[in-house]
Length: 269
Image 1 (cartoon, rainbow, N blue to C red):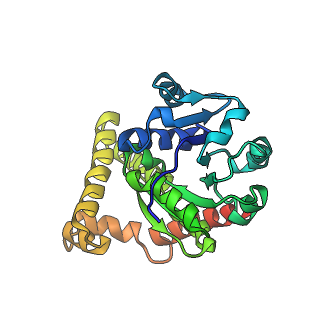
Image 2: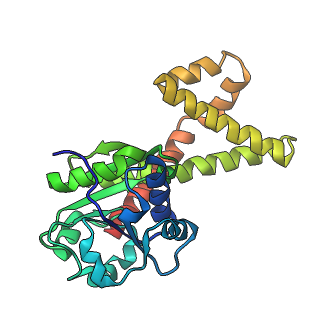
């Protein structure tokens, strides 16, 4: 089956993640604004920009049945109410793509009986056209639609077991916030050691961006890149002895954070 996004597309929820998806679609160009219907009670700038370019913003439910793909991008706690609104307003061949953390496909398949369902955990980096998306679907139709949506704007990882989605959520879906938290800490450390706020900001953020590009472009393992920076007896080695202290360092802290996110993802399901 060819991985092409079925259109028109109905996006339910244009908050942070929904808006990121819209931005990614605009960059990748695999759907025109006129191909989209957007439903959001408090539409933000991106949804309004799409509407100005030809998308339907908050169309009446009677028109939703025209959608070939429905993206569920609402908060997990509120998806049942959305399911009630969608009930009876879906076309027979509509595919549903959920980007809601923790909501199992079995629950979605029960709510939307007869429709192919895909579950995706994308990063907000899809807004740049270079995100990451973990995908699971029990059907070829659902998998093809999800890959058609996210393939042009993300590196896609296809999961064969939905049970791994909680792990993918904890590592990737939540992962950007971990990186931002590290940058925030690095900026603060720079200020504490004498740098101005602006210099600390520019150095911390620029360092992260350049390191990420090197990791991406070279394909080298993190340990190999660390060795190229950390000279024996040098400043980096001194820092890493603190950062990677056995039993109380970064490995243990990140593991605890991922386990907490993993646990919460299961609870949301």
